Amino acid sequence: MVNETANKESVRRKWKFTQKDYLGYLFVIPCTIIFIMFTLVPIVLVFVLALTDFNGISFEGIQFKEFNNFKYIFTTGIEFWNGMLNIVIYTFTTVPYTIVMSLVLALIVFKKLPLTKVFRGIFYIPGITSVIASATVWRYLLDGNGIINNFIEFLNGAFGADFSKILLNNSATALWGPILMACWGSLGGNMVLFIAALGNVPESVQEAAKVDGASAWRTFFSITLPCIWPAIFFASTLALIGAPQMFEPILALDANTTTPVYEIYKTAVKGTSVGLGCAQSVLLFIFIMIITFFFQRFNKESYF
Image (cartoon, rainbow, N blue to C red; front, side):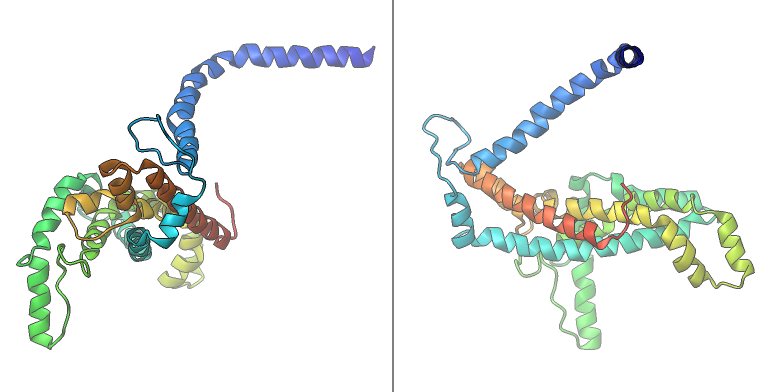
Protein backbone atom coordinates (compact mmCIF):
# COMPACT_ATOMS: atom_id res chain seq x y z
CA MET A 1 0.00 0.00 0.00
CA VAL A 2 2.84 2.34 0.91
CA ASN A 3 4.69 1.53 -2.32
CA GLU A 4 1.58 2.12 -4.38
CA THR A 5 1.04 5.49 -2.73
CA ALA A 6 4.71 6.42 -3.32
CA ASN A 7 4.43 5.45 -7.00
CA LYS A 8 1.31 7.56 -7.44
CA GLU A 9 3.05 10.48 -5.74
CA SER A 10 6.05 10.08 -8.06
CA VAL A 11 3.84 10.01 -11.16
CA ARG A 12 1.95 13.06 -9.90
CA ARG A 13 5.20 14.98 -9.36
CA LYS A 14 6.46 14.09 -12.84
CA TRP A 15 3.18 15.24 -14.38
CA LYS A 16 3.29 18.42 -12.34
CA PHE A 17 6.86 19.09 -13.59
CA THR A 18 5.73 18.55 -17.19
CA GLN A 19 2.74 20.82 -16.78
CA LYS A 20 4.88 23.51 -15.24
CA ASP A 21 7.68 23.49 -17.82
CA TYR A 22 6.00 22.48 -21.09
CA LEU A 23 6.15 26.08 -22.29
CA GLY A 24 9.91 25.99 -21.82
CA TYR A 25 10.17 22.93 -24.03
CA LEU A 26 7.90 24.64 -26.54
CA PHE A 27 10.30 27.60 -26.79
CA VAL A 28 13.31 25.26 -27.10
CA ILE A 29 11.85 23.32 -30.02
CA PRO A 30 12.47 26.03 -32.71
CA CYS A 31 16.11 26.42 -31.63
CA THR A 32 16.54 22.64 -31.65
CA ILE A 33 15.10 22.38 -35.16
CA ILE A 34 17.37 25.17 -36.42
CA PHE A 35 20.40 23.50 -34.80
CA ILE A 36 19.56 20.14 -36.39
CA MET A 37 18.88 21.60 -39.85
CA PHE A 38 21.73 24.10 -40.12
CA THR A 39 24.43 22.58 -37.89
CA LEU A 40 24.00 18.88 -37.24
CA VAL A 41 22.80 17.86 -40.69
CA PRO A 42 25.56 19.82 -42.54
CA ILE A 43 28.21 18.25 -40.29
CA VAL A 44 26.92 14.76 -41.10
CA LEU A 45 26.71 15.62 -44.81
CA VAL A 46 30.33 16.81 -44.85
CA PHE A 47 31.52 13.44 -43.50
CA VAL A 48 29.32 11.58 -46.01
CA LEU A 49 30.19 13.72 -49.05
CA ALA A 50 33.91 13.43 -48.22
CA LEU A 51 33.63 9.85 -49.44
CA THR A 52 32.06 10.80 -52.79
CA ASP A 53 32.84 12.74 -55.97
CA PHE A 54 29.99 15.21 -55.47
CA ASN A 55 30.42 18.25 -57.74
CA GLY A 56 28.24 20.63 -55.76
CA ILE A 57 25.71 21.05 -58.57
CA SER A 58 23.67 17.89 -58.82
CA PHE A 59 23.42 14.61 -56.94
CA GLU A 60 22.76 12.85 -60.23
CA GLY A 61 25.58 10.45 -61.07
CA ILE A 62 27.28 10.87 -57.71
CA GLN A 63 29.66 7.99 -56.97
CA PHE A 64 31.01 6.59 -53.73
CA LYS A 65 34.82 6.85 -53.83
CA GLU A 66 35.57 5.39 -50.41
CA PHE A 67 38.77 7.05 -49.12
CA ASN A 68 40.14 8.15 -52.50
CA ASN A 69 39.72 11.84 -51.65
CA PHE A 70 41.83 11.40 -48.53
CA LYS A 71 44.43 9.41 -50.49
CA TYR A 72 44.63 12.24 -53.00
CA ILE A 73 45.16 14.81 -50.24
CA PHE A 74 47.93 12.79 -48.61
CA THR A 75 49.70 11.93 -51.86
CA THR A 76 49.04 14.80 -54.28
CA GLY A 77 47.41 17.66 -52.35
CA ILE A 78 50.62 19.56 -51.61
CA GLU A 79 48.92 22.96 -51.49
CA PHE A 80 46.61 21.83 -48.69
CA TRP A 81 49.59 20.79 -46.55
CA ASN A 82 51.34 24.06 -47.35
CA GLY A 83 48.22 25.73 -45.98
CA MET A 84 48.39 23.53 -42.88
CA LEU A 85 52.01 24.55 -42.31
CA ASN A 86 51.07 28.20 -42.71
CA ILE A 87 48.21 27.88 -40.27
CA VAL A 88 50.48 26.23 -37.68
CA ILE A 89 52.84 29.21 -37.96
CA TYR A 90 49.90 31.61 -37.84
CA THR A 91 48.31 29.92 -34.80
CA PHE A 92 51.43 29.60 -32.67
CA THR A 93 52.44 33.17 -33.53
CA THR A 94 49.19 35.05 -33.05
CA VAL A 95 47.55 33.17 -30.15
CA PRO A 96 50.32 33.59 -27.50
CA TYR A 97 50.90 37.20 -28.55
CA THR A 98 47.24 38.23 -28.47
CA ILE A 99 46.59 36.55 -25.11
CA VAL A 100 49.65 38.10 -23.42
CA MET A 101 49.20 41.57 -24.91
CA SER A 102 45.46 41.58 -24.19
CA LEU A 103 46.24 40.79 -20.56
CA VAL A 104 48.85 43.57 -20.44
CA LEU A 105 46.38 46.08 -21.88
CA ALA A 106 43.71 44.91 -19.42
CA LEU A 107 46.07 45.42 -16.49
CA ILE A 108 46.93 48.92 -17.75
CA VAL A 109 43.38 50.19 -18.35
CA PHE A 110 41.88 48.39 -15.32
CA LYS A 111 43.38 50.93 -12.98
CA LYS A 112 41.29 54.02 -12.31
CA LEU A 113 43.45 56.64 -13.98
CA PRO A 114 42.58 59.75 -16.02
CA LEU A 115 41.25 58.93 -19.51
CA THR A 116 41.14 55.20 -18.71
CA LYS A 117 37.73 54.78 -20.32
CA VAL A 118 38.91 56.63 -23.41
CA PHE A 119 41.86 54.27 -23.84
CA ARG A 120 39.58 51.26 -23.31
CA GLY A 121 37.49 52.45 -26.24
CA ILE A 122 40.56 53.11 -28.39
CA PHE A 123 41.99 49.66 -27.74
CA TYR A 124 38.62 48.05 -28.50
CA ILE A 125 38.08 49.83 -31.84
CA PRO A 126 40.14 47.29 -33.91
CA GLY A 127 37.91 44.49 -32.60
CA ILE A 128 34.77 46.07 -34.04
CA THR A 129 36.33 47.26 -37.30
CA SER A 130 35.30 45.29 -40.38
CA VAL A 131 37.82 42.98 -42.02
CA ILE A 132 37.60 44.88 -45.31
CA ALA A 133 38.33 48.24 -43.68
CA SER A 134 41.21 46.77 -41.69
CA ALA A 135 42.62 45.03 -44.76
CA THR A 136 42.50 48.28 -46.76
CA VAL A 137 44.65 50.00 -44.16
CA TRP A 138 47.07 47.09 -43.86
CA ARG A 139 47.45 46.77 -47.63
CA TYR A 140 48.53 50.41 -47.64
CA LEU A 141 50.96 49.83 -44.75
CA LEU A 142 52.43 46.71 -46.39
CA ASP A 143 52.74 48.21 -49.85
CA GLY A 144 56.20 48.11 -51.40
CA ASN A 145 56.69 51.74 -50.38
CA GLY A 146 54.42 51.53 -47.35
CA ILE A 147 55.30 52.69 -43.86
CA ILE A 148 56.28 49.25 -42.56
CA ASN A 149 58.52 48.36 -45.49
CA ASN A 150 60.13 51.80 -45.47
CA PHE A 151 60.89 51.30 -41.79
CA ILE A 152 62.44 47.89 -42.52
CA GLU A 153 64.56 49.49 -45.24
CA PHE A 154 65.65 52.14 -42.74
CA LEU A 155 66.73 49.45 -40.26
CA ASN A 156 68.67 47.66 -42.98
CA GLY A 157 70.51 50.83 -43.90
CA ALA A 158 71.09 52.12 -40.36
CA PHE A 159 72.27 48.90 -38.72
CA GLY A 160 73.52 46.92 -41.70
CA ALA A 161 70.77 44.36 -41.16
CA ASP A 162 69.22 42.16 -43.82
CA PHE A 163 65.53 42.10 -42.91
CA SER A 164 63.27 41.09 -45.76
CA LYS A 165 60.43 43.38 -46.74
CA ILE A 166 56.94 42.13 -45.97
CA LEU A 167 55.37 42.01 -49.42
CA LEU A 168 51.88 40.57 -49.92
CA ASN A 169 52.72 39.41 -53.44
CA ASN A 170 55.75 37.45 -52.22
CA SER A 171 54.83 33.94 -51.07
CA ALA A 172 57.80 33.88 -48.67
CA THR A 173 56.58 36.90 -46.66
CA ALA A 174 52.87 37.23 -47.50
CA LEU A 175 51.75 35.24 -44.43
CA TRP A 176 53.08 37.99 -42.16
CA GLY A 177 50.41 40.35 -43.49
CA PRO A 178 47.50 38.39 -41.94
CA ILE A 179 49.64 37.74 -38.84
CA LEU A 180 50.24 41.46 -38.25
CA MET A 181 46.59 42.20 -38.97
CA ALA A 182 45.46 39.55 -36.45
CA CYS A 183 47.91 40.73 -33.78
CA TRP A 184 46.52 44.25 -34.16
CA GLY A 185 42.82 43.41 -34.36
CA SER A 186 42.43 40.60 -31.83
CA LEU A 187 43.42 42.45 -28.67
CA GLY A 188 40.23 44.34 -27.85
CA GLY A 189 37.85 41.41 -27.34
CA ASN A 190 40.16 39.52 -25.01
CA MET A 191 41.02 42.75 -23.20
CA VAL A 192 37.35 43.29 -22.28
CA LEU A 193 37.12 39.69 -21.06
CA PHE A 194 40.21 40.07 -18.87
CA ILE A 195 38.98 43.40 -17.46
CA ALA A 196 35.81 41.64 -16.32
CA ALA A 197 37.89 38.85 -14.76
CA LEU A 198 40.15 41.33 -12.96
CA GLY A 199 37.08 42.94 -11.45
CA ASN A 200 36.26 39.64 -9.70
CA VAL A 201 39.65 39.30 -7.99
CA PRO A 202 39.06 39.76 -4.22
CA GLU A 203 40.54 43.07 -3.11
CA SER A 204 40.80 41.86 0.49
CA VAL A 205 43.23 39.10 -0.53
CA GLN A 206 45.38 41.56 -2.49
CA GLU A 207 45.45 43.99 0.41
CA ALA A 208 46.41 41.18 2.79
CA ALA A 209 49.30 40.27 0.49
CA LYS A 210 50.51 43.89 0.48
CA VAL A 211 50.33 43.98 4.29
CA ASP A 212 52.45 40.82 4.40
CA GLY A 213 55.07 42.54 2.25
CA ALA A 214 54.40 40.82 -1.07
CA SER A 215 55.74 42.67 -4.09
CA ALA A 216 53.55 43.62 -7.04
CA TRP A 217 55.01 40.78 -9.12
CA ARG A 218 54.45 38.24 -6.36
CA THR A 219 50.88 39.46 -5.87
CA PHE A 220 50.18 39.17 -9.59
CA PHE A 221 51.60 35.67 -10.06
CA SER A 222 50.35 34.23 -6.77
CA ILE A 223 46.90 35.86 -6.49
CA THR A 224 45.76 37.75 -9.58
CA LEU A 225 46.86 35.27 -12.25
CA PRO A 226 45.31 32.17 -10.56
CA CYS A 227 42.05 34.08 -10.06
CA ILE A 228 41.76 35.12 -13.71
CA TRP A 229 43.14 31.87 -15.14
CA PRO A 230 39.66 30.55 -16.11
CA ALA A 231 39.20 33.64 -18.32
CA ILE A 232 42.66 33.15 -19.85
CA PHE A 233 41.92 29.50 -20.46
CA PHE A 234 38.58 30.35 -22.09
CA ALA A 235 40.12 33.02 -24.36
CA SER A 236 43.00 30.72 -25.32
CA THR A 237 40.62 27.89 -26.20
CA LEU A 238 38.53 30.13 -28.47
CA ALA A 239 41.69 31.52 -30.08
CA LEU A 240 43.08 28.04 -30.75
CA ILE A 241 39.79 27.00 -32.35
CA GLY A 242 39.40 30.17 -34.40
CA ALA A 243 42.96 30.68 -35.65
CA PRO A 244 43.12 27.54 -37.87
CA GLN A 245 39.93 28.73 -39.58
CA MET A 246 41.51 32.01 -40.72
CA PHE A 247 40.23 32.87 -44.20
CA GLU A 248 38.90 36.41 -44.70
CA PRO A 249 42.26 38.25 -44.32
CA ILE A 250 43.74 36.19 -47.17
CA LEU A 251 41.01 37.37 -49.55
CA ALA A 252 40.82 40.91 -48.21
CA LEU A 253 44.59 41.47 -48.33
CA ASP A 254 44.95 39.57 -51.61
CA ALA A 255 47.98 37.92 -50.05
CA ASN A 256 50.00 35.40 -52.07
CA THR A 257 49.69 32.68 -49.47
CA THR A 258 47.25 29.95 -48.50
CA THR A 259 45.52 28.33 -45.56
CA PRO A 260 43.43 25.15 -45.25
CA VAL A 261 40.14 27.07 -45.39
CA TYR A 262 41.34 29.00 -48.42
CA GLU A 263 42.21 25.72 -50.13
CA ILE A 264 38.76 24.37 -49.26
CA TYR A 265 37.28 27.53 -50.78
CA LYS A 266 39.27 27.10 -54.00
CA THR A 267 38.42 23.40 -54.23
CA ALA A 268 34.74 23.37 -53.30
CA VAL A 269 33.46 26.88 -54.07
CA LYS A 270 35.57 28.19 -56.96
CA GLY A 271 36.01 24.65 -58.28
CA THR A 272 33.55 21.78 -58.56
CA SER A 273 35.24 19.19 -56.32
CA VAL A 274 32.93 19.50 -53.34
CA GLY A 275 33.68 15.94 -52.24
CA LEU A 276 37.39 16.70 -52.11
CA GLY A 277 36.69 19.96 -50.29
CA CYS A 278 34.62 18.07 -47.71
CA ALA A 279 37.54 15.67 -47.18
CA GLN A 280 39.83 18.65 -46.58
CA SER A 281 37.27 20.02 -44.11
CA VAL A 282 37.26 16.74 -42.21
CA LEU A 283 41.06 16.79 -41.90
CA LEU A 284 40.97 20.40 -40.68
CA PHE A 285 38.29 19.44 -38.16
CA ILE A 286 40.48 16.61 -36.86
CA PHE A 287 43.46 18.97 -36.62
CA ILE A 288 41.46 21.49 -34.56
CA MET A 289 40.11 18.71 -32.33
CA ILE A 290 43.63 17.39 -31.65
CA ILE A 291 44.91 20.87 -30.70
CA THR A 292 41.90 21.48 -28.44
CA PHE A 293 42.21 18.03 -26.84
CA PHE A 294 45.86 18.47 -25.94
CA PHE A 295 45.22 21.99 -24.65
CA GLN A 296 42.40 20.66 -22.46
CA ARG A 297 44.64 17.86 -21.20
CA PHE A 298 47.42 20.36 -20.49
CA ASN A 299 45.11 22.24 -18.17
CA LYS A 300 44.72 20.20 -14.98
CA GLU A 301 41.51 21.89 -13.82
CA SER A 302 38.13 21.94 -15.52
CA TYR A 303 36.25 25.25 -15.57
CA PHE A 304 33.48 24.65 -18.07
